[in-house]
Length: 85
Image 1: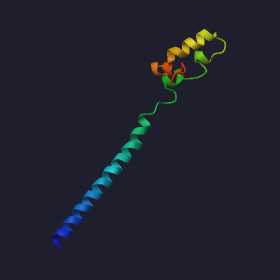
Image 2 (image 1 turned 45 degrees about the vertical axis):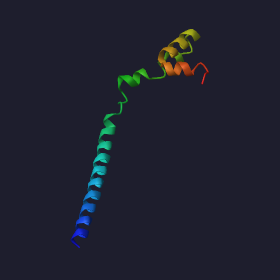
Image 3 (image 1 turned 90 degrees about the vertical axis):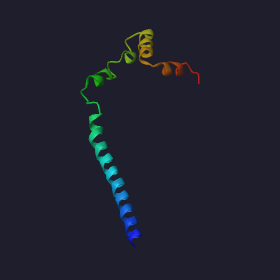
Image 4 (image 1 turned 180 degrees about the vertical axis):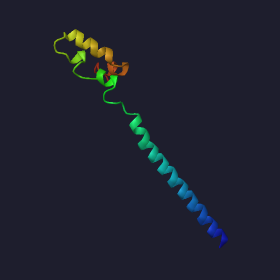
């Protein structure tokens, strides 16, 4: 009888400990997720404003627009844009 009681006590402790870890991780996720978001008025959001991107400006020549777009692309995107698989 003593072994059964000890086994139950250990199992309840393990389950409680796992539940506590899950709760702590969940709370920390909700606290930290807001800090990792970029604020709306941040300078990086101004750079991404689509009204100011040269490759979207129809007043520029095709060569200027393509040149701007190619400068923004990484090597993987440039290789994939040539139509190869």
